[in-house]
View 1 (cartoon, rainbow, N blue to C red):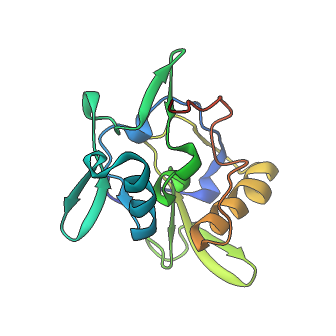
View 2 (view 1 turned 120 degrees about the vertical axis):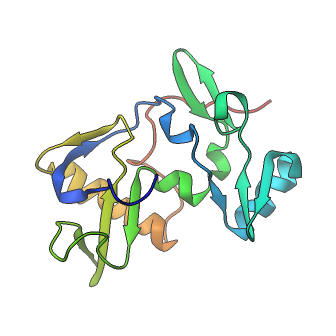
Length: 167
């Protein structure tokens, strides 16, 4: 999806992953070099695609990420222990400049730095409205820290459902 439909964070009441699986349907997940190295070491290179100087997670059944598994009417990521940053951040998008006109409600200040945070409307977990305190004071700081690379573990920005672990 392009950036033309993104929702500024200030128009979102809350977000929670409901394991619907839409995040892994049709999206090309780019891997950073260190992420590619970890995935390839464990699973081999047959789980990735190469293109335009980038490496992506391969799609499997139904144009879904090869690591997405159905379980109890939900879709669970089997890469939880080494989930790529692009996956950790979805449906959030962090930008250094506004995507829309200046003053679009995307400004978010964290430790003296300005970010522009948006959410992808394709995610079923996005709830429109005035931001809740939990969303603004717990979830968004975690997303910014993950995006900055200073935090790796997810607490508020992942599914509450038990993850599937490969054998």
